[in-house]
Length: 131
Image (cartoon, rainbow, N blue to C red; front, side, top):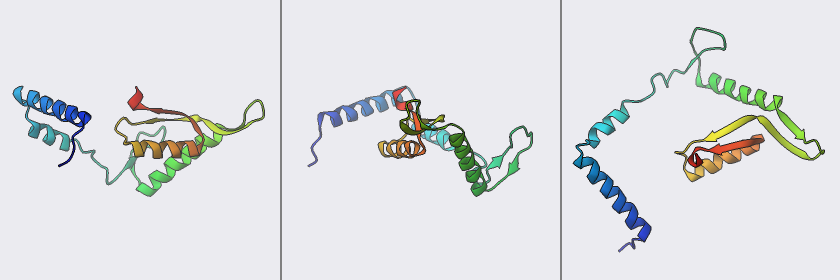
């Protein structure tokens, strides 16, 4: 028989109370699930791109979009890269890019994203879970 900790008991109790409260108020979970599923982003298969200053959208491939994104990150990093601080210490950082992680990140996703951003030299990192 699995052992239930006090924390598990409180989680189960809170979830059960919330579910009971919602159904008592007449909230239909099936309608909520159906509404959630209808919010799919249109056009994901065919990403559209609008160049800066243009009023026209054009179809491009995912490879082209990822190349544009990577080039913009590299340009911003190169433009704001600091190899040494005023005292001559090696810092190898970029101050022109910031990263805000999502509150829906798992611990592993947050760890991975932080490692990637630190690898690029970012010093301005924030997780929305703290906000």
